Length: 85
Image (cartoon, rainbow, N blue to C red; front, side):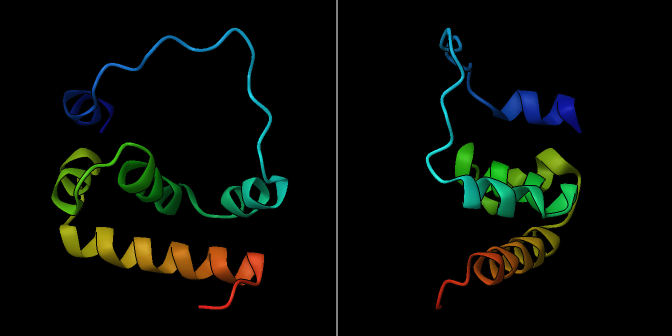
């Protein structure tokens, strides 16, 4: 899985000398409440800006699984954060 992801990801700029504080601790807690498969899909889709197909290839799952995990993860984040749809 990691090898496939490395092929798709652009080089990461050097890390800052300090770790930035999360702007919303509630969002960080909500993210930690998700399963690893759900978090992996969200990271690929929204932080790495991969397409559904690229995410599926990177994680070794089908595009349909990417879509369902993304949908369930976003629903759980909404519930955790009590955000209206």
